[in-house]
Length: 281
Image 1 (cartoon, rainbow, N blue to C red):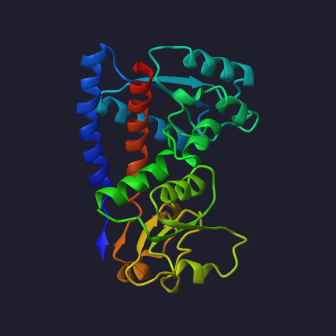
Image 2: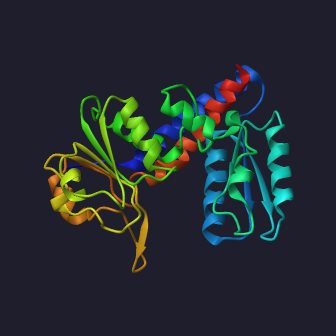
């Protein structure tokens, strides 16, 4: 069993990114610009935003942080996002989710043009992914693919099973694996014979949001197991995989924490640079 060190791989990517953003600045005379919008005072969201801003600074990306009160009206949030969409210094826009319940998140996200959609959530970018065309891909599944690539794990011809079908992880994950020539099965809450399907996977990606859901009997010997889940149990972070019992059966596995998690922000920064490069070209 080989542990995939997401922390180290993410650190390598950020170091490489720093060099690329410096080259961008020399070439175009401006920094890559990423705008982050936070509405309200959700503690977890505040931590995420601080981490993203710090990561931007380390990578040589200029961050534009915009904070709105929890009772900000729909129109005010939409107008802010539209103003950022029209700002040439801003190459990427990120609206931190979840938004307060009185706001229509879909309408707000729709104000972000596909060219500045660093999260890869827009219909245009998801459509491009489905068609195998160039576009921006959701950060977490993109990070999983980078973990596989840098760990020299072959996807072509392999049987991949994705547990979960969310628009943020499961669906784009399945499309990325399909585009990488894997044979892909997507499982969800209505899938029958779930354990048997998982046990056939060469690559198993767990993104179902249930702590320690994947048990040893659901994993084929020698499989690659990627745990996207982040759950808090008794004050401890655990994944969707029962790591202690599953790990000995695998060829590669990601830990929680320290596996997929660090890759998400690293890929967000990569997406910001890619959006900036496309804007300049």
